[in-house]
Length: 276
Image (cartoon, rainbow, N blue to C red; front, side, top):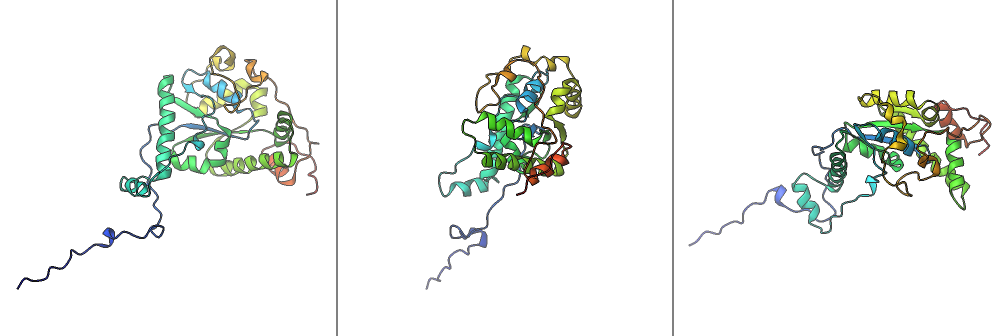
């Protein structure tokens, strides 16, 4: 009489969990092609385009237009795709990190330079993810008096919503302060950059580990690509090819209490905050 054969025993790892009940998977960081990119963290309307063309004028530094890496996404189109990627020690975030890294590496290789700088202002809002993606990244914190940022945004918009503008500037300022407190970054004020561009760029070069070059101050003589909306500043000021004085905010300029607090922490004069 034939003996009954028991079905092969399934290990716990072999038993699939019902969809939605399995623990989430976080992939470990993969090796990066660009190990130490440089990110300019700033609010909008804070002079980041001026800073990027000054840096891009250096023979070793590539600072292209805003790359908007945070808007490059990977879509896992089938239910089993995540499982397949997990088996490769990847997940959606890490796949996006690999894509971001490849974009930076491609741009750096095309330029023939060895330092790459991304100055996209909204990167400020995701700096913790950038830090997770590139543990060896370097950061330049570009500050500007919040009152001057508010004034610039108000002038730029055809039908400005003053409350929304203040909220936008506060959102950037909070993340900048968070980065200032947590990152080993080079801090630069836009007002100081425009007042003494040679001293400011010399200090920047020291931070980046490159020799200062006088050609950095003559950015108008270099090709920096097209100046147009969504890729950075496109005003006549930046098109002039020379550093121009920054508009300053006086101590009498009123700011909401939290913005006034942050401005003061950054060394700016502030007036008496209005009542909330």
